[in-house]
Image (cartoon, rainbow, N blue to C red; front, top):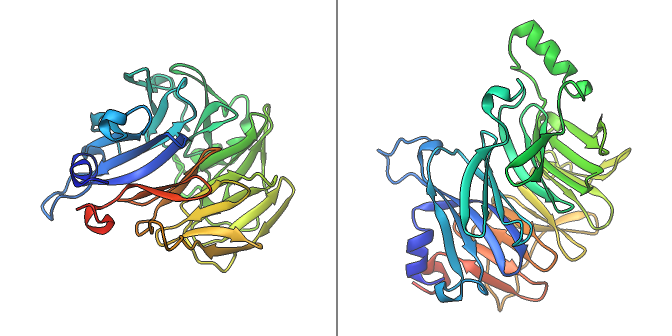
Length: 341
């Protein structure tokens, strides 16, 4: 990455999240980092940017472009399915950002005055079967039905089993403190086969009509869920291992791993996982650090992974590499380490 492009788009910022539509359409959310010891701004006071990498569409810009700066967000989670749908992003307050054909606009899923008592904190956004879903704290899931239009798949009146424990806790203590309920990640094989999970191993399955609790072997906080091409569902997160299985049969395949897995992605018949130190693959039922080819770029910054049908992205705070199944390309890098400085 050229030093002038790094200085324009990356310097002074950290990559938070990534989403990919295909090899030529990738987006990253970035956040300003602390400039010095006197910079005491909170995360929501720091500027955010959505950076796009599209070498075919943005040839005159070396493939890079951004959608603008804004404040007021502690985080921005991205979802990118195809060009016709555009880019979707949500912040931690269940506000949704959609960009299509160059237009940009923030709108809430619904006015805050109409949100139920459980709609508190969004944690992720993802496309499943060509439709977008947002998950959040206290077991909330919303599904996109149109531009700036969302429906609640976890309405307390329609799905009381999701909220019985929470309602009892609120009645007893006046708040939801001490609850392990909450979703941080979501994935599915289809709109009728969805898995959402989060704090304390709290995991549920949605069949298109109703929610059912899953009995997972472990109570660690789950950060990421992936429905694999092998028919299995994978859960991982804070030092509890990696859980693999189907609705009624689950096994922890890395219960002694001690890793904090941030994200997982399925690409070309293989599961890829990332923590803050390594990119891993699942080989023979075991997690192994991925070995990059010696004649290609090496990853030195780790955070997460994202995949489309034709490409995998492995990224960290200051670096991103794209893999087409044959070779790696470094699309974001620190000039001093990449040799472009």
